[in-house]
Length: 143
Image (cartoon, rainbow, N blue to C red; front, side, top):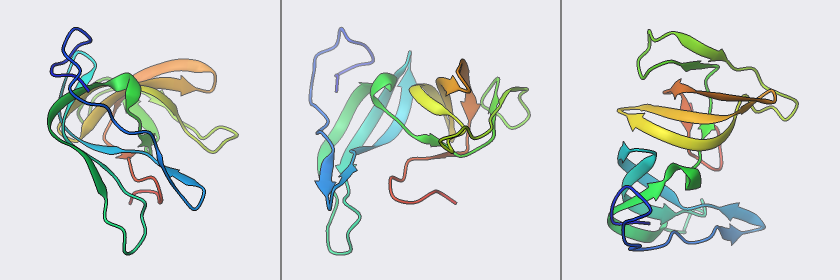
């Protein structure tokens, strides 16, 4: 985690490695409040083991920046668009591959409101586009 949006800014913290419970790895989840040049501003990071009596562990509070190379999510939707709005042209129609995943997200690039720009692999080709149909929940699929 850096003090600003770039590798030239001071390191102000580190996100912890995945936390394991019953053989399942739980990654740190961040609250994104903005983005710039492939970096994401966060104000909180927690690790949750999704057990009834376990509280999430707060790993970071404050303002920090993390490269989109180190963040992940699942794209639930079937389309990537050219821009962050519903009527933007569709640039990629996503279909699930043999693993059941419509898109293997490799990097987050930007965000605007509920939209996120991603790049990754789909059916052995590199793709890039915007979607608002994402899920960061590690245990279940999002509605």
